[in-house]
Image (cartoon, rainbow, N blue to C red; front, side, top):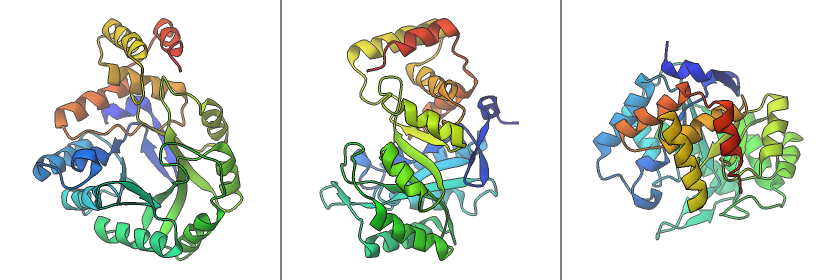
Length: 288
């Protein structure tokens, strides 16, 4: 039995995954652009994640671009039967590393086929549509046209489940009128809790919420408060932030990323960390 079982599992699409997974973004080069300095070390992190019991990996072909997917295939293919690989599309990288929309039918179709080829898969288990109406965060606006393209690719058998990323609650509801939404991936952490209502709404529907940037955007005061709780619990701030997410709601699936095996081991230990009520009360006070 994996130590990650302490945090339980949750249904993602039609598969059960452990609630602490792995995000592959940091395996690419600086700025998530270009190859890593040590590709062998990157592959070692991926193998170590699976050996520790991780069966949910989050990636995208625009990480690099192409770098993380190629590393995943090199390190892990043929994949274990219980491994769920989730990818994102709808963005591309400029020559300078900038993040640009890629929303046309041709770009979306190419992205699905590129992911299939680079991951060495015949079908993508879960594809998240990453809204690019605003690169920096969710913005209202219709996503119907690109989502219709993805729904068509799903009907062709290239995608099993569709999810959403960087979206508003209204966009989730609109998408649900088109297809079952397998998951939602937005920024959410101790300090940024604007999606509290969405987390609870999705939990009531049995839909996973996958938060990214577990320590993103903390102020110095918020970081100090988190570090104080971490010292009390004999843990690292990242472990506490991850454990808080796991305790916040059963539908939260955490995907911390790292390019270090030691840091990976440290992050995954958060699955067994229980934050007592007093510490939870302190942490809840740091929300921005």
